[in-house]
Amino acid sequence: MKTYKRDLEGSYDHLFCGHWNGSPIEIGMPPELLKEIPEAETHHYHNYHEYYVVLEGEADLNVEGSTVKFEPGKVVMVEPGESHSITWIHPEKGCRWVIIKEKSEPNSKHIAGK
Image (cartoon, rainbow, N blue to C red):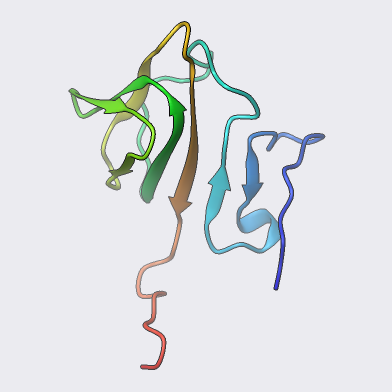
């Protein structure tokens, strides 16, 4: 078993694990309930899947020009290459989510027992 702890001292203050500490995936969460869009949030894309798991509050995610409502219990998967950004966060309720980045190399997946 391996456990991970958020690096509050380094540049990964919102992340728990990733390739830099031996995890095959990257998992992070804002350190607090967000009430406004982070300054660094702009339309961007990646060559890997991102999964947003919404924990509390409300926000809007724009993916390729379409708006997806963030609400508790919803999971949104952004495909590789899709442009996306958080465009609105409810000013009173705020929003908090977990993000999982699947950065696996091609052909690196396997099915247990095969």
